[in-house]
Length: 80
Image (cartoon, rainbow, N blue to C red; front, side):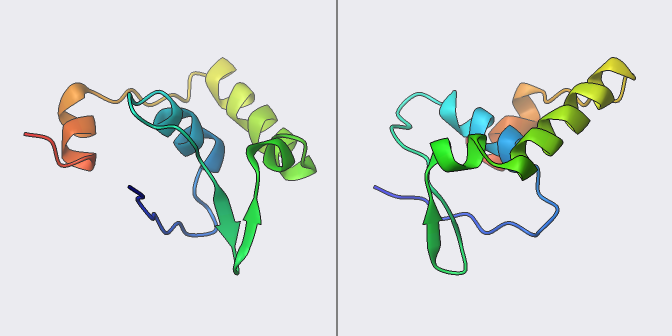
């Protein structure tokens, strides 16, 4: 079974990838852009990923965090 998710250019792809990888039953995560498929290894080795991770770490250090509750996660994934 597959789920396809479309993201805008400002989406926090590393966070989304990490979130999805923690869900029971998720076996593989692939990212594609304009019909090109990227492996997780390609993404993690990219300069853009390093910059996003650095910004995320800086945001965390500066107290800019967002916690997701079970209610929000259930709403996102349509669980009742």
